[in-house]
Image 1: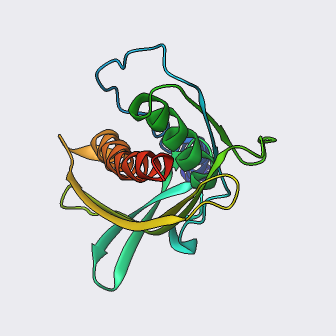
Image 2: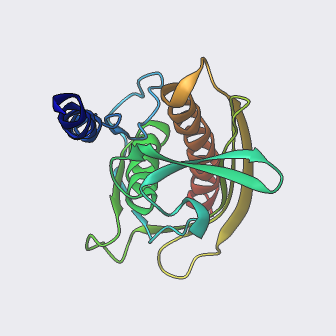
Length: 195
């Protein structure tokens, strides 16, 4: 009869051990500005304000989304953005623009801006991470000079290959893609300054 008493206790102990098993730890990622060659100082300050940025709803979440094929995506519960992309993208664009436009003082929404600032609008249409190690970013942007100057608009489509496997490499590729978009916006801003 004692043999029959061991079975329930064994089942209870095994259940407790299974309940104590831990799930994988979440990892958090953030975009970062890409370092470029130092610009010479001593130029006239240029005020730039980045308006609220729009991103596709599919990637507007804390989890990193990767594209599996044309009709399927993977949403990883344990690979997450440290802050919303709607906050990260303008922050990184601002840091990149400071490097590409000498004398630039760049603020992002909701910061108060000067009426003499160049206004930049950004609509991210694609922010794709592929399991094959490439990222694609498609962005419609515009630069509106102060005092009703003529607006300069454009669209940047950037494909970047990851420099290795995993999410670290995909996030670095997105940062490089965002720097390429910032470079396009900087060229348009220089053009608007000459008007």
